Length: 236
Image (cartoon, rainbow, N blue to C red; front, side, top):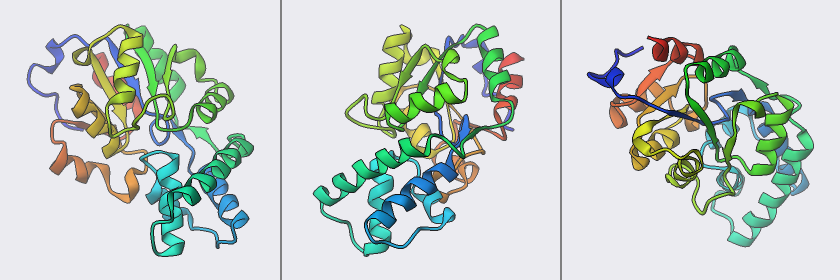
């Protein structure tokens, strides 16, 4: 873990904005199940778990587009992608979070963040229907009075729209927030929003090691092994 940036502890932060997939939950096997059911429905061979992990990060539509490109060898027409994306969203709901689990220490850590006085918001590229289903199933909804999902704003992360929406609902400014995520999309969104970013090594990041990426592209971001390490850091 990197040392704290100079003067960082002197800056009072009021809110923590959390990504979902790869940050709080491991949902990869549900995503694999849903996309492969969708591929099968359209006459395509299933994709490997590793391949699907590299398609995660910029929202469900991009995941579908990348999956189709991998089997077709080219980007499909928009109307085909849109149609198959709708099938994928249905299949995601049908998986009912069967294989999704919280990472170790998530519930305890979120409770500790609240006890430290932080307001919490969820900012995810996952569609709202899937997000709310999982939050209820995994008993996470009580932690997040504000939830902004991928279909709530015009542009998903790495655009900052989702973060700005959460900030408005929390009544805070970007300087008052820390983005906590697992990917370059989270880091880039935070940079665009003007907030610092803490990155976890628990996620997918489109197949790229997040620590290696951050050294080059986001050296101001701190990288942590797990969420419990962030609790320890913010408790100092």
